[in-house]
Image (cartoon, rainbow, N blue to C red; front, side):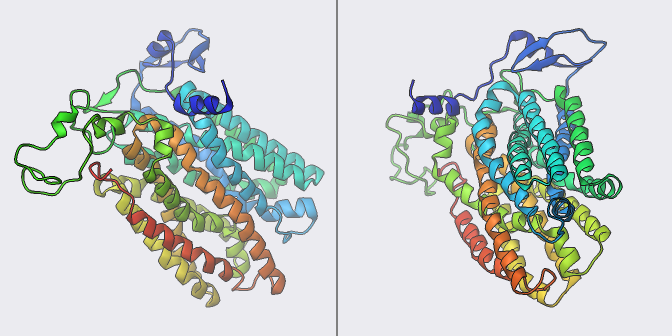
Length: 506
């Protein structure tokens, strides 16, 4: 078997295979929990307490797991402490690159391991992810002690990015499968914790750094996150065979809920006698479809991962998410620095702003996807991209005029839009390609975040160049970056207009 065949097999085979005893025991929550990885019970054991599993138990477990890995969003609180520990200069500007390196590995890891996670289940994916994130904290601590910048970049950047990639998608996929009737809510809550993670982490980091130093802070938080996720792993599980809610299954494509694809023949889509080509019996216009050999609805519903990611809809959604993420991503890593340097606030206030930032991030990840259940996914993406265009155009004026209230309004609106983009995308993918492809397509589309991370290195280089010309406290040092980001957001808005979401258009 050649490399091409191996890759095609890896990405096409996303069906989980479980032993009958695993399927049976997943119907219950047990204490102590059985050790079940890769679809088999490694240590069967016994149990003291056993209750029927309820799908709503997945929601809080997913949120807490995402909060642990979402502490990554509070990275800006580490910047000064790490630069001081490694180089002796709090303004060296080297620590922010770690954030972008981690993001660069985030997307490819999610893309490559997404199909694997679908095959072995979310427990194994979350375990691998939190292990990588734990190792990242250990390497970061050692890097600060030994003053080795390369170790920080490799240890946290690589291991942290890879761990985040697989840990991020592991709770999302099962929620899309368990809640086919509430895809927007499920996807929003699944990643809301990632946005909330920096709320607690920003305060914990400052307190631990002040009391024990930055290296010990990494040790303590790394062990804490690992312990919490290990306790919650047994709650994660995949749906039983044939699972459906109100007739909606993991294979259902948006717009086909009420269509019986198994009995729908190509002939049933042919025009009735007397109809003109391209016209329905009631006179309304309809898309002309080739019904000679295949039912196009059945083709959509049987779409595999390779078909999905090669479709025009997926490519345009990829561009859409990248353009939506870039502005918030590049700003996130410098948030606390902006508050302290450009507006002269204390480290304590910067932490408070970061915590409020996390709340708006989580709000966007829950509220907008929930709204999309009612008004549609495409509409909410047009809304949040439009808001970002206004914010990006306004930011240079806000900074030059040193308008702190204006800055806060813009930054909180920005992060709500940023979070909304990531919160709604799993539901959008499920609508377009079916929930059974969500984990894998979600992993691939998260490469947009990684591309943004690589571009973020350029963002940081431009910023450092502007700082060298003036100072790190100058009000206009970010304006050059805002000017090139604005047209990218506009491209994303225009691109989104042309994404086909109607089943007949597709």
